[in-house]
Image 1: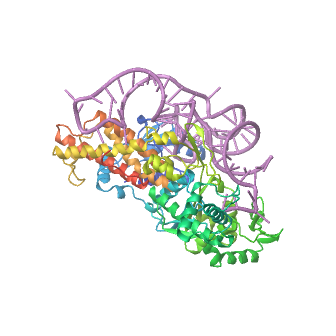
Image 2: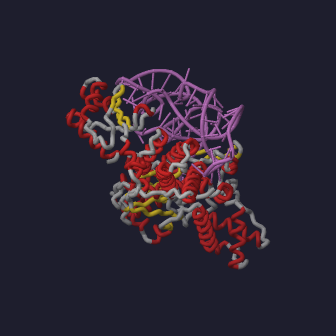
Image 3: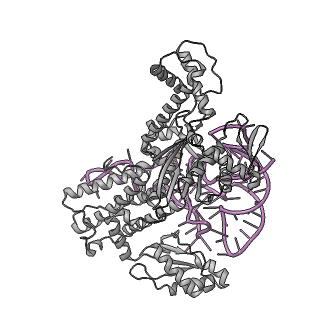
Length: 549
RNA sequence: GCCCUCGUAGCUCAACUGGAUAGAGCAUCGGACUUCUAAUCCGGUGGUUACAGGUUCAAGUCCUGUCGAGGGUACCA
């Protein structure tokens, strides 16, 4: 028995009582107040409109007809049109056993059925170190991939590596000029080139490797290749520091070299979706429902980012991905509709593409906003951030807020490792419970396994606080499921904080290992379940659950 | 100008996608370790959900408008 079974039961009662309203949406939620029970169902209000009757009567009628399995739920009550259900004691204890048995199967569910899925995230140009903003996307994308993976999707994590075009040319030439400087030659370094100190480092490395006879512009391709590869390695290192690994790196030049770009252009021409104007090739995006046409090939002969992204997405479909997740920053909000429209016009089912947009990170230092620009090099790198606050806090902080909210990141706060960083609060819960279990072992209080613990012993768990803890644990699978369905991973850290907020006061008020052996075993069984959930949740977030702190 | 995303306690953010009396943390004030970890706990203070209308049994959430922030509106990515 679980939440889903209950939902089916209620749906059945409704369609029997009110056949005309069989399709009504059944919402089940947590009531705002404990005296309203554990589950609230406001369905009578929606039914009232359809069957044109008083919602209070309807609620009563449904409650009376809910012949629920009494082993799991106490009789249904109604209150002002809401139907309220309360978990039975035996249901709570059954769940507690399940959690102690195997947390992964307790929270497991299958949405994906092995659907071949790609999650693309970060994909920053290798023209500079990753910034704090990329960090948010990295953590968001990776956590989403984790969630989809445990939801039954077959997930590939991919990084799109832009290794061609103007940005790379600028990068290569920036390095070349710094290299010239190192050779003692005078240079005029353009304002719109990459100003950062890391360019000088690259030039130095280049000089160490290739000598000092290559400053002539004809060697630019060598600089480009060298610099892009170096930057890409640096980016991989940065991501690895916060525990992020990819299954696949996709190089942009593959799209060009393989002829796929050309193929797409031919298809667009055949469908009369492109035309020449002012020396450039345009897409008729205005005919696809968008506000204006867009350039595909610049008059310089170079493809635009939009065109490459169209080809890339076509290629994703051609590689057999059935679900395509793109994690983008807010600056892509205007380009992805064009990409989707054109890819759709090429005959692909773009409803299989899910675009997750996250808002920008505003970086502050003691309340002062820091303006960031890669070009000007006045940015804070992800490396610097991780070095200051550690990988765990970095990950937790970035996943704590919903993707759609502007994230304010204050360096002073992050650096201080203060109470404002709730990752410690959650981890401390794990460490505390581990400590209790160690203590219990020394006192010969065993942590019983779910098969051997008797109902008689579980009867010691009879306080409201203990029941509330178990009820909170029962919510865990719903939280994970919801996070996966809605692409809202921030629900997980929010939940873990809430669970910890229930555990820590419990710890203060109730002694786990006491003189009463059976009571101690019961409480040990409970806190172990809490640790299982905390540890599993942290694991999904890529954060460790320390046994000691 | 137009298009996205937002606007919730002094600050950072939640609020189960339309549900019951809008919740946490930080900050601030005051308390708690001879007992399994004080990175903890307990209590006080804090709100016309930017503003004005509308939709309905019910609006922080939906629709319209105004104001404010960020992003886009490039033959940059």
